[in-house]
Figure 1 (cartoon, rainbow, N blue to C red):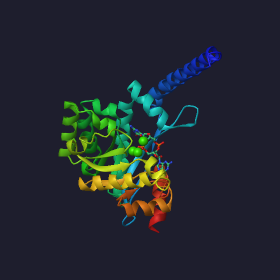
Figure 2: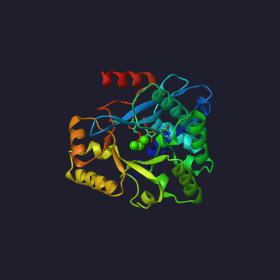
Figure 3: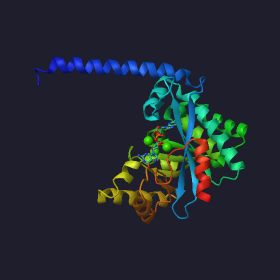
Figure 4: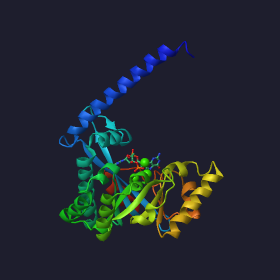
Length: 278
Ligand code: C2E
Ligand code: CA
Ligand code: CA
Ligand code: CA
């Protein structure tokens, strides 16, 4: 192993350098993406497992870079978080989402809430809560019909800023959901400390539902825990009818995934809603 040591060191350092360069390029492009109108939103419904109705609509950020190819949010969101761009980008996402929701509501498209993903970095900003409420007011969207999706790690930090932010949001009826539930930490204090209304079971559980009996029991336990706390449970990544059926039996309230719809651009989403009704 020692023999190859030098070579593999050179190999790794090249790859490392490339990675840093790619990150720097992405960061530079990200800073211009908003003014160049390179972002748009995709929408994916969460479906009520009892009656098949659309309950929520999750907005997912999409970016077509200057070269014309789509970039994955899994790659660029962490970079936007590192360089602080997530703050203006997050503001833009929220406003766009609320505008689209208002338009669809006025057009008679039936749904309950619009959901927006929020980064832990945005929550550190003491202005965040006020920004959310101001945006709702400006756009004319009822804050009671806005849901913010947060990961467990974002809810884990207990600071004065966070408490004030959530108190303000709760006063206006904004709801929170815990995204990727089950992948984070096992400290569950935040569930009663903050106004959480939904738990989203991470899609890694759903994917392995039939492979491993333990996964099924964990999923059942998550549903039991959520219901004891009067939270609704949304299963992510539902791709098959078998998974839908099993999750319904387990007691999941809502489901989201390719089985119902992929995330779609606004026009495509409207078409999807129409074909469903017909
Ligand atoms: P997430 O919030 O957990 O979003 C769910 C991801 O699962 C989305 O990936 C969605 O396209 C994908 N998905 C939905 N249904 C299925 C399915 O049935 N099967 C499979 N295999 N995947 C499915 P996407 O759009 O690439 O987003 C990745 C992540 O990027 C999101 O994970 C979220 O953490 C982050 N993200 C996306 N948009 C935003 C945003 O506006 N703000 C912030 N802060 N983060 C965002
Ligand atoms: Ca999400
Ligand atoms: Ca998720
Ligand atoms: Ca995720």
